[in-house]
Image 1 (cartoon, rainbow, N blue to C red):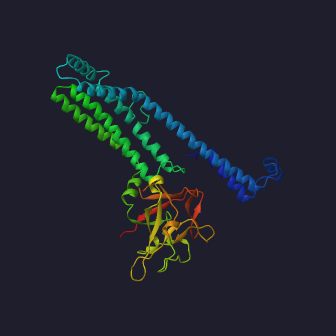
Image 2: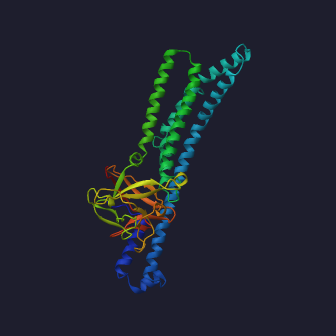
Image 3: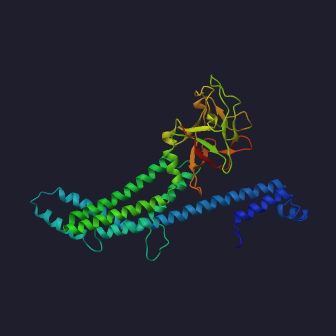
Length: 383
């Protein structure tokens, strides 16, 4: 099977080969004609900038297509949603009329017929809402439903560098949307139950609505990374941060009894079991309420198995720009956690500092700030 060649892949290939081979694979006169006399470093830099631009354009196009799909489904659901709200509002208004008012009896009868109508009644509205949420369509079976689109849009916002959506806010948004989806259907179904007098039919429709909501919940959760749930439920534990595919972990230099940082660096080394200098915990930053960011504090033990002070991860270091193990919480760097999909469903994140526009990266020996995302595999350290 032939590999798929993309514009980005081609640019990367050319850039790497120009850098490695020093353009020996083309004549000097040809290279001069191509580059206009620019240096090889300039050529490689230009290629890298073009590649970065293509990545941004690709992301923008994806957002546009996602928005188009979203608006299409919202338009499909609009009339049904408005119909449900209108009928329920009328039901509440009629309830305020006097019991012996002839106008009330007339409006009750009118609303009942409208609610039980085959085409524009409550059940027809609920059918439309369900199909739009699930992406069900006879003419286009491949279309994505609102539940999937909302989950995907929210996850893309979570991954965005600009901090549009923090990890905690991301979960709140997902839960709120699903709750509102259920509430809308319950409102529509309440109108139906008030209009339908046949008890057997009422029970059948109640069962049907319950099954639909279970189906919708399953569809929604299908597109929410399970790693997100795991990270949130394990947030009160200590973790070990592994370089994927290795036993190398983040190690914070020990602190003395006064909390002074020993060496001031955050290094990478092979994991030593039950070593507190390699175990880190997420704590809410002072700006957590507005930014959803965390700071990383290590768990360290002395010879008597007592907790040592200090050990907060920060991006201010004497070690050539590497990360450091700060003695004070106030000096720790606030990080945004971005969960990643992993084939084995393990915990995996990139750790981003919005303040410095950098990620926590993996150097040869040290954890260092980097402009490119670096993935860390998390493993619970235990108690």
